Image (cartoon, rainbow, N blue to C red):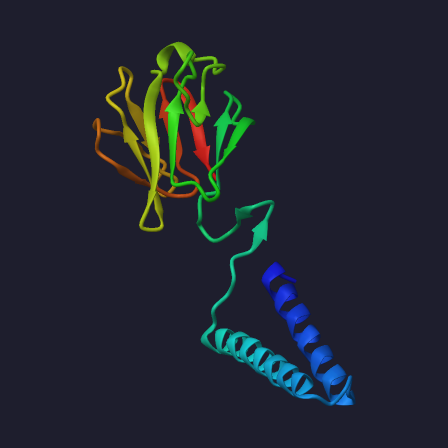
Length: 184
């Protein structure tokens, strides 16, 4: 059961408990009456919202370890080795921008490829990933060796022009120098 559904059920049970306690009378005062009314209204509102969402077919995203799964949403970036095995990952959940490059002294990048076997081919700030309009985009920051995107949909490789964003999909592979990063 999803977390939001569990919370809704817990609130509804609490509302019923307040209604019952107020009804059996902790003092039959105006406070009891107001508590019963408020609990009943809260119960009805939550029930109607959940029923309305079910009738409209709205489904909540499935959450596991803070990542949205199986709906095409990109939630992490994975560094691949020569055998396509994942050797490092970076979480993208709830982020809007990630700089890809190498950490050197005072600069800070979000996806640090300093320990990559091909680090010599990677600029300090090589590329940036930006989230906008429900999609992730990559942009080459004028790097020496450029950025290539291997699209999952057709398995073709596309070299990016500097400072021209490219929309990304789950399963695409970003190639920076000879370093490959898979979007999952």
